[in-house]
Amino acid sequence: MKSLQHRHEVLKKILRKAYYEKERVKVGKQWHQDLMCRIRGLGPIETGTYFFMLFEQFFWRLTPATCFLIFISVTLLFKLDFSPKYDILASLIYDTEEVTLAQLFEF
Amino acid sequence: MPDQPHKPSDVEIIRRIINGDVNSFEHLLKKYQDHVLMIAKKHVPYIEVEEMAQEVFVRAYQALPGFKEEGSFKQWLSAIAVRTCYDFWRKQYRSKELPISDFTDSHRDWMEKTLSNQFDISFNERSHTEEARELLDWALDRLSAEDRIVLELEYLEGLSVKEAACLLGWSVAKVKVRSFRSRRKLKKLLTESMVD
Image (tube, rainbow over all chains, first blue to last red; front, side, top):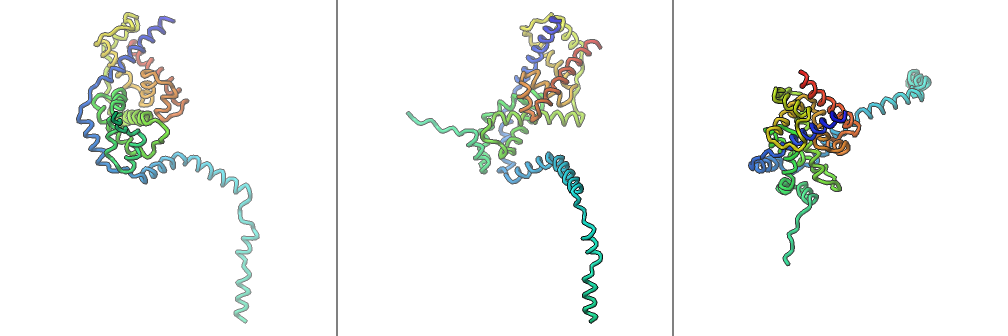
């Protein structure tokens, strides 16, 4: 068991060594100039655009929480009997005012 | 004694860039290009390194207004670099343009020798390291982008779970789970390839 663990440790060390070998890769000098050209091509940073990007990022992050809050609020409103009362509805439907005015004009 | 020329700090340079002095970005570029290239070299294939490092600096430039001055710029840039490399692999897996290498007999021999204890930890032969690299690339190509990046950061670079989580912008729990799964997959890949 100990031997197997030892072998895996050896393998891990060898793989790590191989992984760090990748750092030896050489990069051309043109790279630096090309990048600065690209950055200059982008122009000065527009902070307004950045805030919009942040808003967009947070908008989607907050969407599930917002939907959940809306659902809770609607449920609470129905539970608290928010529906229009019958009397108010009736007063709108059977508006006696109009009749009275009509009578006045007839007069 | 002549006064030493004032070397602007990262924060001062960043303020200048945000105020419209694009050329000041060159200071940051010179200071951190080796660091970014080193990250890119480890995480993406050789032919993609230059393009990837450029992408990292472009992303960093565009995100500069979001940099919190109390934090370390190097750490912030490292996180952008790692996430850019991770995005590269995600794109590769999505477009299925991944170069899949084969597990050859020489890889099998190498694995057998390694696991049969014929190799000493201190072995230093170049060819053997190259074989190990090929084998490592072969195994990593067969992992998902998430498993790959976590395995590279935690298992191969030896970062702690917290450090890896910080670089990737993931929760510690997610990194732990991914780390466990990716190690198991790597082990399975290497042992199965020996049996086949």
